[in-house]
Amino acid sequence: MFRAKSAQPHGNRRSALTRALGLGLVAATVAACSGPATSNEGGSNNETQSIDWASIEPAKEITWWSNHPGASKDIEEELAAAFTAESGIKVNLVTAGANYDEIAQRFQAAAGTDALPDLVISSDVWWFRYFLNGQIMPLDDVFEYLEADVDDFNETLYNDYLYDGQHWAAPYARSTPLFYYNKEHFEAAGLPDRGPETWAEFEEWAPKLAEVAPADGAPLGLATGTSWAAWWGSNIMWTNGANFSKEWDVTLDTPEAIAAGEWLRGLYHDKNFASVGNDSQADFAAGYFATFIGSTGSLKGILDAATFEVGAAFLPEGEAGPGVPTGGTGLAIPNGRTPEQQLAAATFLKFLTNTENTAKFSQATGYVPVRTSAGESETMKALYEEVPLYKVAIEQLETKTRNQDWVRVFVPGGDAILTEGIEEIVLNNTPAEEAWKQITPRLEQAFEENVEPYL
Image (cartoon, rainbow, N blue to C red; front, side):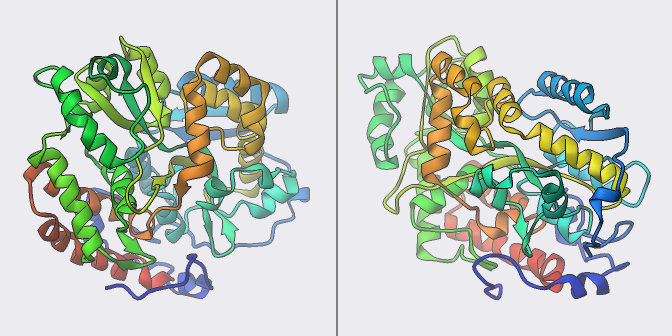
């Protein structure tokens, strides 16, 4: 098991990072998970230097790498153009990958080269790896110089990037999972027009939903896959009183974790209440699944694709109460750029996440606005009036969310390893105790080789 650390990952690790310069971390476990290695090769460490930002003239052109989360390319182009018109700084928006993992691979490959962007997508399961690699800079000083109102960021979302007393990214396209349901199926099954408050209530409703679902459908669509399975899996664990880890200590051998995994296995195999499907979101929109857990960032796409009226609700609770993870991505500024480029990128980042623009981004995509003030902006009020479901995501964010288990978001490859364990349970009907035993040593090795020496 891992050695337990303090309640918030922090501490003086700068000397360790300095010693690590030029040393590549052993990354066999990470490579096996098809993720970029954690290595300082070709990069610089996170030793921060005091920069007099007032003496810096921002660059006139920057490059932004994005995968356009939530089909956001159009709104990203619009916001970039608006920033250029206001500041005179040109933003080159580059499609750097189809998803967060592809961008991470490309960002890793660009370390130490002139191909680095000035602003880069930094998802919840990748930013800490960027930090360990020495690839990104802290934002606190430059945000203070720019008078960015960081206190207005949703506290949970902004502090997702807090380590060693500094913030290494800013929230951007952020989300929580939502419980979507087909109102036509619910009406046909004689169920109330709301989501189930608990998983126990869902199990009571599932047989009725199975009766009205297509022959090849299911009461619940719940897909697997890296950066997804362990995300919704957090809800399954937490609502059953379990965790993937406690701080750095893997806890998959606890009775609660085994029971949570067995409940999940039964959902797919013993009771046939859940199915992976071919594409769970598309299958839900086509009417094959009566319910579906999807990102708040998928809301607009689901509403556009569905041929029926869609309902949305908080994730169901369990005996241990609620358990809603946050997710999505932030934006980080690479450490290997000049102060002029970094200041221009930070100026754009401040603009991109201001009250009005985060509201516009939310309106266009369904991601939650990252600033508290945006929830009461005229843009969001108009959106709530037009599509009340958007407010469900905001209310869940404010009342039900919690920070994720460290082994998923801080250990390189942890998310992918957890996904393999969940897929053993879901796809292969492997008993939870056996599935968890298979992945626990790999999670421990990934920590011991790729994180512990640098804490």
